[in-house]
Amino acid sequence: MVTIASILVLTVFSPESLFLGNISGEWWMFGLFLALLGNIFPVLFMTIGVPKVGSSVGTILSSSELPAAVLLSAVFLHEAVQLVQWGGVLLILIGIVISQWNVSYDQQAEKKTA
Image (tube, rainbow, N blue to C red):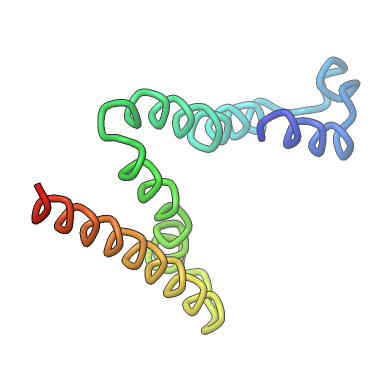
């Protein structure tokens, strides 16, 4: 994911602009901030956390990222979120509930047979 993003960025901003000094210090700080919060920390924390919480909870955490991003962008950044976007968030949350419902139902059935 990071490799493809790097390729896309380098098609817009040539590598020469990095070495010739055409980017101001503010952009470097912004880029570093984005790299840490958008690419490095999520991958690092998921790599550390998923073995501890299990793959089913890891799946839920990764699929709940988009609804959280939409909600937080509406609340903190005051971005306009359309009804279609809220519908997508609702579909994701319904999918999470259904997947966990089946898992908990299977676990209850295993306990009854054991």
